[in-house]
Amino acid sequence: MRVSGWLNAQVAVLGLVAAALVAGVFVLADRGSSTDDAKPSGAQVRSPHRTLDVIASPTPAQSAVEISRRLYSSSPVAIVAQAHSTPAQKAAIRSAGVLGVPVLVGGSGVPAEPKRLGAATVLTFGRTSKVHGGRAMPLNEAAAAAKVATLKGSRAARDARRIDAIVVTRSRADNAAAVANATNAGAEVVEIPTADARRSPTAAHALTRRPQTPVIAVGTPFAKGFAYTLAVVRARATQTNGAYLALPGRHYVAMYGHPGSPSLGVLGEQGVRASVSRVHRLVRKYRATDRRAHFVPTFEIIATVASAGAGKDKNYSREASIKTLEPLVEAARRSGVYVVLDLQPGRTDFLTQAKRYRSLLEQPHVGLALDPEWRLKKGQKHLRQIGSVKVAEIDRTGDWLARLTRDKTRPQKLFVLHQFSPSMISHRGRLVTDHPVLATVIHVDGSGRQSAKRGTWGRLHKDSPEGVFWGWKNFVDEDKPMLDARQTWRRVTPRPDLISYQ
Image (cartoon, rainbow, N blue to C red; front, side, top):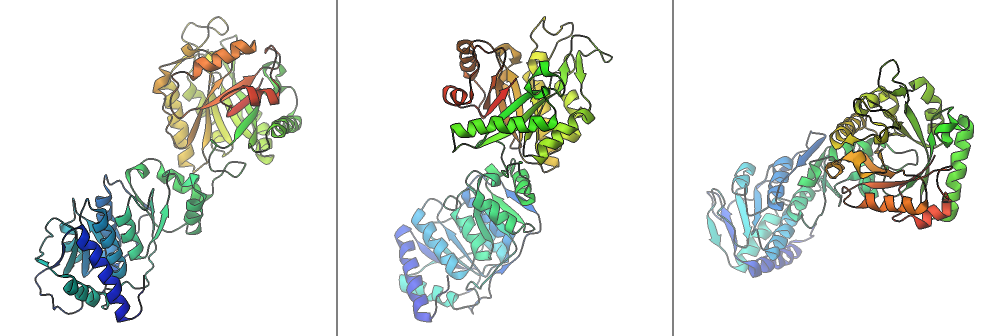
């Protein structure tokens, strides 16, 4: 804040001092000098060089110190406030704003920071720990006001600074001292309440407007996943519908099947162009039911098909070639259709099969589905036993997909797990669901009478992992009766995030 005229400066400082005196002791510490020293030179600031620097500080006080260390090379004046006094901290922060200098909050690292800054003068608000090299001198209000006014009139007063840095925090209020240090140094401060840049349009705009500016993230919530979300936002890596996130906020309406195989689902009942037209017609039915919801046309393509015979590789799974799947995947991209590749691995494992389709999964509009019904143990055969999988195998596959997505700076992907019986996924409660790059969906795909389907839906919701989304499947021939679009949308609760048709 700029104050014109010496008299206005006096009035402003007197107000700050009065607030500090209410909170506790206001003292001036001069390192090896008297109160009549010559006017100090201004604080020297610097732009950071690292693309991203995460300050995972456990306390706001430590965050303030760390921002000071990164953005200030020196300062003739430093301000220290009492750790547990809101009035003292507010007064200190306002004073630091007037002077354009760092403000610290009593705690770890505070005594050493003024020495690093070369601060000849340290102002303390409230009761603070001893400042290294300082000589505390209680002052009366008039003397303090005169001294601060002298500092305000010197080169220590904040200039019109602007450094090449963006400081992000979940809350300006919770990290008030760190925010003050960033602002006083000339950095731009951006709030991201969720610590996820994709979830805040305002933050995303600020970060994309200055795509090369170094970012300092303040707080432990930024320690995991923020590097990815920052990269995605700055690369403008979005879904086919323009969103950064796959879920929540939209509902996927999918045709399920294998190209050229009508018996495996509706997706195989027609050619590529007809499939695109049909899925858009299907989505229009849902849009007519709810104009406010966002529905995404989707293909769930069975990439590996469970087979009755062992085959050459003895794994009871027929893997489609990438060349076979590419026409559907490419047509989907051109027409705004999302794609999920479904794996039915037989006696091999999900990760081995997923890696076969790496080039397709690298595409921003392609996600992955695992179907444990068709995951066989040694000696088992399809349709004689219902397959199952350990959650550790799912997590290994999810970890691989997450790394691929993160390394390629792709938008969040759907990661779908088919299930109609609790036994199909062992230790499901241990499922890892906190990958910011994956939206994990448990897809309840039982068929039959609606009462039985609703019972399965309810059972699988019990004791489900935190952070999962839900899918519902309509079987055109097997359901008795099959729900239409309006019935599916209004009767199935909670509303499914993924609705597929087989």
